[in-house]
Length: 383
Image (cartoon, rainbow, N blue to C red; front, side, top):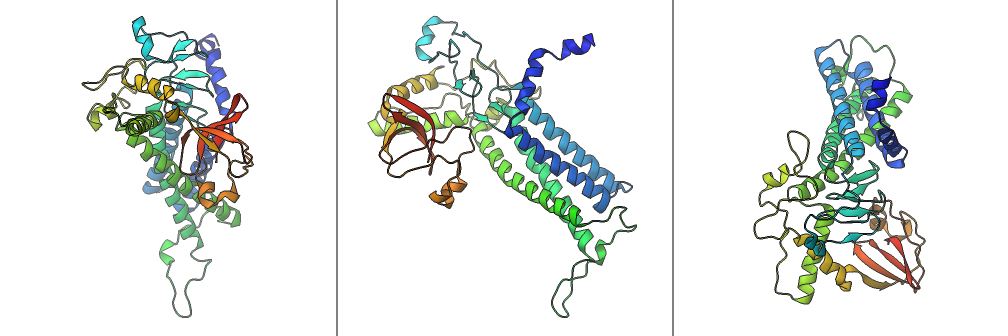
């Protein structure tokens, strides 16, 4: 008992609270449904364990589940890594290049940003992910990306099992063709017959699991390609946005300067190794970063300070021309607006015609910004 208590610390038990959130509940529910149904369908109705192929298939299903859950929990509980409270650069003169966080009472290290959900400054912050109820950043970027890769691969395998199960079990219950045209499905016969018949409930459960598997493959697969695109450039989602604003600022003021992203090592393989290593531990300490030749250690933070001072880049004032109820996915704003609703926990702001907002960034159909309330603002997402 003493050994157990020494391993399971109070802080670790506190981290379990991350599971009590709609994101992990849905994510783990989808994993449980797809993996459980794939194993049941495979063993009972498609590929029995007494065959070599069935045994290999079952082991592969277990392997997918274990690897997916391992990387998922790694991303959730290891976390992104936080800038130490009260941190400041070793050289006090470098503090002029850094922003100061009043909440953490520390300077923001290069590539770090403050997360309002975690209430800490996150090392190399990419985004706050509701599905792991944690930030994606320096320490867990590799685990998070591997989860995005393995989940679609496992779902593709599961979807194959679901389709083949329905195919083999329904061949003698459905009539295909018209008049004399028939489809011979006798090759799908299984001998001996399964112990438990493939009834209506099993069919409905398999069809539901197939829909989850296909939806997860498409949605999570797209996220994987987005993450790999920025990893191969050694960027984060936030840094990509900063770079876009830098180019916009230079173009708007017609400045005789070129912004060069300082952390791109010039090679996709070198950028890849900044995140993925054989040891599983990312390179560096999350505070100091290698930079490409000709760049300044604080090039990115200096650009952030310029953008903060530039009110045009930082925020644009808009006047509301139509009422907006503040719903998460508004159907009355068109099908494209509905399906491009941001997957974020940021609150939607209720707007009335004639009010003013400050937009800090935006997508094609959505804006992120603040609602002007007299001398104060209300932060959130705007349609």
